[in-house]
Length: 572
Image 1 (cartoon, rainbow, N blue to C red):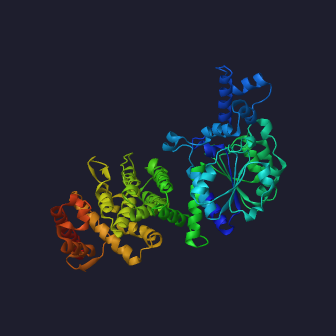
Image 2 (image 1 turned 60 degrees about the vertical axis):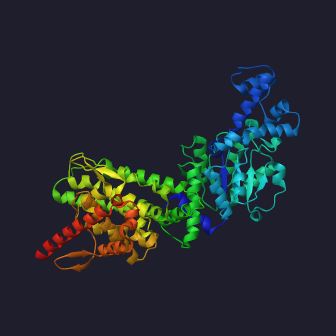
Image 3 (image 1 turned 180 degrees about the vertical axis):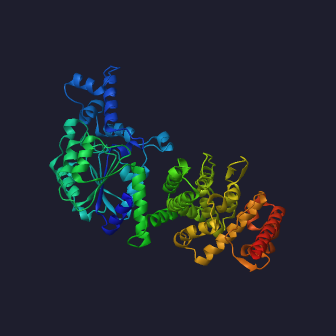
């Protein structure tokens, strides 16, 4: 199980048991300068005020000029005369101006907002930060939460019992609104005031810890506070997109912390989505896919941002595209019996690997919009691109099977939701090459289950594969799913016939079956035509370029083909 899913279960079962520790990485992502960057800039301003330019290393210049390391206290005292001037100077570093606000800089990141969601849901109560900015407080206030803020030892000394505080934000190195609290030099970061140390001991002993964006390299006092806690009631997690430093690795091992290689935006958003989903499902052990679906539905509800859903789809599509059985083969595996066994193994693997992707595509096609359709529609072309390495044809054809599966997942969902534009786009817009001729066709027409799965009853195999997606995750009834399947399958066959391609036996039940085969969805389409005439919804959505004439010709041609196959089967 993914770490963020495990964390979500613990959060649900023990509300408020986790504290978050944010380092500089969480704020730099928002365009905030680091504490070191601000101090260097202040030193350069001081040198310029004295008429000195080109000072090289600002800290070395300051040490040589004044005989001691630079501190914020000294720099602010030299550059300003009043508390108001000090705050105004610091605000220019930590609060966005008009242009920065337009560019989205110095604003809470997705990570800050996800943490605010966790606080609002009661999963997290304490946020520790080494940053001088107030991005965390801004994100919390956006979520209608007014935090208790500790920025110095005096604030910590008068603090109420932690379990009584709904949300506590602790600036362990101070913040820019209280300049005298700001710590940055090695000497300042070597130890904390006793009241801060006592507060950290309470947090690191009683709470699980989620660390992000903190290197641990430059903060010996904070590092020691984490290390000296020996009582661990809850698992802890450390997320960073890069490998941790040796100092951080030692601390991670000492505290038995789980490392996750992910950036703060990704991990906290996934965790917040999973925590919401676990609460929504009201079940103790839902599968990871159930959580992803619940998160996707919230992302499409018109109130939540869909960034996470977009990124999850992107990761899944890229992952499926890179599967070795699609990219490296091998393509020659032996005699026909070995090929058949290997084909079956690879098909089983593809069905298991694509379950999350197909579920998210179906959910997005069902509840989405024209905007969200773009998140997956053109990727059918990527997964349906032909491969011709030479080898066993069945294995080569199977490379394109995920595109077939995506077409059916999206098309059935769009039809069930009566999203006719999306249905028509799924059937006609993604275009792929025929492997041998190089001619380009609609992917839905060319990549039938019969073509890519290359087995008997291939259409039924896809039907059975998608049943769980629609009956469990989209909560369609069995009858509704079968009905949507057959209608989509019939429309896809019409598109296939319109493209001049032959089709294998589709998984469609007949209303009558003797010398003729009357597919059940044909009666549905006839009712649509009787009711709407030339303005039936599927044509209005753009199917067959909206041409009633082409539709009638396709229906007649498919009817002839069905009857011919029925006659051959009866004769046999």
